[in-house]
Length: 541
Image (tube, rainbow, N blue to C red; front, side):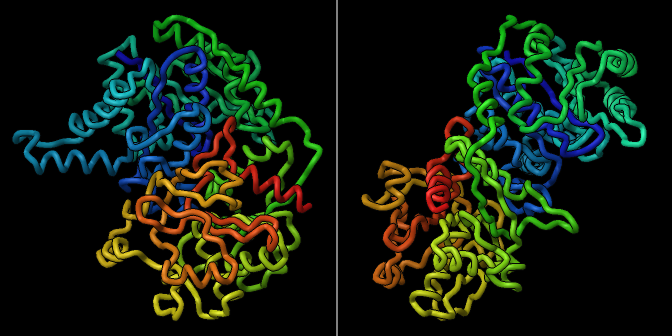
């Protein structure tokens, strides 16, 4: 039977619970154990696909088409393992499954209640993951923070599983220890209260991971342990660091792997983190070269603040490629609506421009201007999904002279529908069926030889993850190609345009893809699209 580790959060959201879960998974994997990870989200959506990224961060896309929380991407990057539908669960999925079973009379006339039926469905998914993946240890991340009404059934499921298998389940609580400036010392009271909430639900954490500005000293650990009923040595410090990839090393230095294995009555082994240490050294090493990349997007702003998480996978992919090129990349976040209103001058003179994923009309004209600006000024350009579609629109308007060219997403009555809905998607849209109805997941494409795309991938058949409805309108393909646009890849299944580019004698690097290479990039396997793009930015500089 698998062993189970429940990981909960306390005090504040966004504490880094996903990073901690992934870090513990990495430590156990590098100690020789087979691990599986699962994230339980509180919301009633069936997946993350219909959620505004400003509301809940970047939607992470899996090979199997699952639209998941960004923590699933963290799992993939730390463990170098593909995740999918078995690794991501929402409360909406749980309720829907229970109600569907009731409608099919699978409960044989029982009155269906939250306990045991909802909690049974939660534990069924956890146990099934362990069996399916043949995992030694299953790590279960509970969304939200302790004390929220939305996640109470997840905690109840963990309690019931602990009751049933007391030697095979442990609970780790990740909590925030603030250091108020006017006091100048860390305060553990918020975590004490968070642990009391857990206790009230019948859960006693075996370990507390204390997120704080610095390491906690011995006197505070002792006092902390008394009030939380946890041994001081089982309170693991997780201070602020320069990069999240340092977290596994910090946890390992406090012997967390050995402590967990002893508690689960498993053979005690040390984690081999030699490769990870070298990676962190490479990340933190001062770089001799620096470039600036402007990202012209539409999901940065949230009130008076700017949000990095809306494009989390993109920033990760840039990081991975920058380490491979041993260059420091400074990113400028530019609101596409501002470009629309104030013009291209606000983009300035970066070494590269990226137009990323997006939906709808707001800011689209600013993104089109950015694509034109990069082409005209010979600035390396990378278009991702929407950035590819709007680069096509920009080319149609500027080079082909079709001033009214557009995507039918933004102008259904355009004279030149260079980006449009394919018939399958038209059916979905008529029914207002938005969730999970796009071209999702991994799709294979064939690349033309002697193109920039072939130079990037160095092979003819490639697979990228997709998440879109609108496609290049093939009836205009010959017009574009005669005007100098290169269609460098098409999907194998439906012959849809996947990648476009400009020849090197016209532009140093102008490449756009309908896929999402950012979702496949990993720290030890930076995606070649980003590696080549950053290299081109360096050469241009």
